[in-house]
Length: 380
Image 1 (cartoon, rainbow, N blue to C red):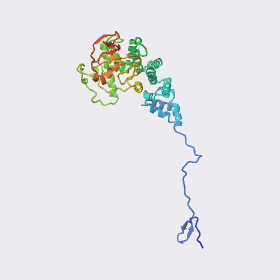
Image 2: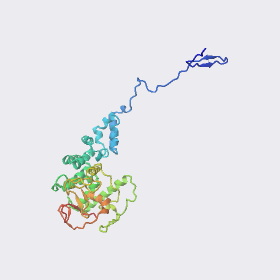
Image 3: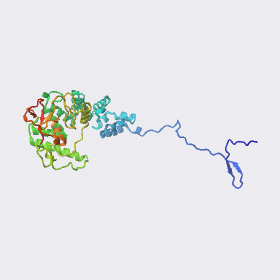
Image 4: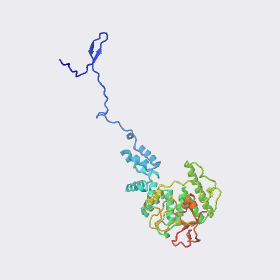
């Protein structure tokens, strides 16, 4: 007789005192459900309970302190509600200059539309940035100048200074389109707002009598003010004052240059401080022409030799050259002064030519120059 196979396992318990085995009740295993039941609904999101005006206020703060476009774009990609509220005109009008700092190699129609939307919302930084791009890069002179003028009307200092440079050079037109008095007036307004380049440009104009009656003492006062403001900006940025802060100008390995000793604030080119941060619009111009044409914007045109400027010529021989070496050229006296103390002072070598008479506009010309370039008087 074959033994019976047990299909179920028998459970027994021992009754105390008897030793009898009685079947016990089988325990149930409690297995918790891993996935929620279909009837379970998620609770309300905390973000949904925040009013729209409070979220917009937070986004305005975030946009005004953004250090790069990604800080703001990441908000747009979070959810539909933030995407909708982040494109509110109030938020777009408060974006910082770094939040609208598009890169030249990333330029596209979508970037153009984003800047245009910020302009329509009233962003002064977007007005200035898009105005510079359209004027110098996209060859849309009229629209670019109008956008910069829109920002300048609202006391945007970089836009005022850029319009002053356009007036000084007659950019976008002929040499006869120069308006020196308008350039000085715009420069004075930007200098009043504390723009360092405008202060330095106005100081040199007063010293040279360029577009304004000559006043050497008043021009020197503006130069000292520009140097002091530049030094204060560097000190307030948290950079430790080490070897760059000296009481005298560094030695120049060129016997033809006059050595200046004393307080650097009283010089024409200021303290030996690190170069200031380049505005995103100027960095876009420099990268735009570096990607497309190297050091030349094409058709015999030249770029400003100051690396932090990026402005190109809009016609041949628009910028003025250094009267010592004749190699570098600048769109303004402020760019010349800044590049002189940062780089060109160590590289400038006199050219074997005589300096002739001026052209009646405050520009000195070198004899034998067939191109008729304007030149800068050397800074010594």
